[in-house]
Length: 417
Image (cartoon, rainbow, N blue to C red; front, side, top):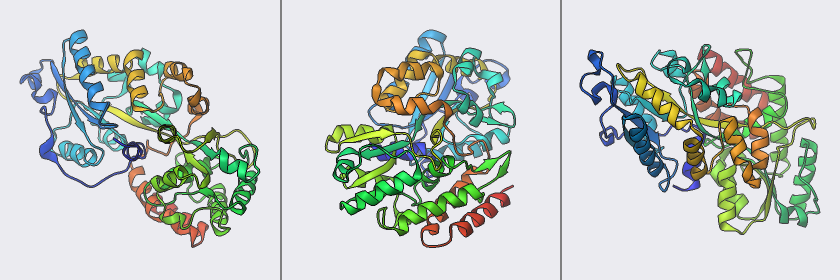
């Protein structure tokens, strides 16, 4: 799978498709041993896993299933599904009361709200829970209980083209928004694009998160939506100022993240918000000289990063609890989880994982910011609908009034309850 597929994964994009007939391996414990409904314990469970890459995902889970069988005696039916299909396929199975035992997806809160999931108290070994970074526990918690167990993560940082910086006479990456604007102005004067700003529907909430988090803003505060807060309006207004001054690529509202990455990979852009898969693509191409730095803040304070994770959630099914517990005990063992994350090219979600990945100096910036990463409100069951509204409408601020655009999004969020 190329980088664009990985990108689709970590932003929680919901893509329309329906291939229910492609589901294999049954639906798990409910029919695994033919007797779980009568009180017996399941000996077989099913994992529906998202395909992060064609080269690694299925190979990892097949190997994991063998280890799971050898160590615990349970059978794990592995069903790897592309990100184009998994949302629709899994939701249809759940609507038909035939969920997999374990589901790997980017949203969990609505299922937790409906009482369908095991909480950490039910199935997650204490050692595993204590190893998960607190920021992921926070965003995996709904109504006081931890349901969204993270499998891997990504974090964003500022990528800058060192050749473009040198051409423009810039010696160091910006640490404040004022410096970023000044650097973008110099880059434009030298004939290149200062900053690639993707506010298209692919992931505008991700781009905006980097700006609002680094201006003291947030999507929600103390349980209430704050999309149109003073800090967020100031952030979006500054972004519009950059676009109006021609310091970004043309038409940020219609530029998706993949487009912005392609621009950066072309060598004509000075700065872009990126993450480790972009670094992997740049290293593979070997044509752009770049460095990575923390994203600038408005006031020069400590940088904050936008983090993204996906979840391994467990559905309550008669007789499957012990097998599910064993699944998590094995997955969160250091050998398994670190191998999976390393092969897929993402970032850890555990404290021990952060220590393990210190061996790679290219991950230094991400690992330093990851423990304090801030996520979008994935613990809110309505976030998916709010996110869709943001993706479709935020870009309008580039040709309109940022305050009005955010006020309408605030109204949309509040209307979701």
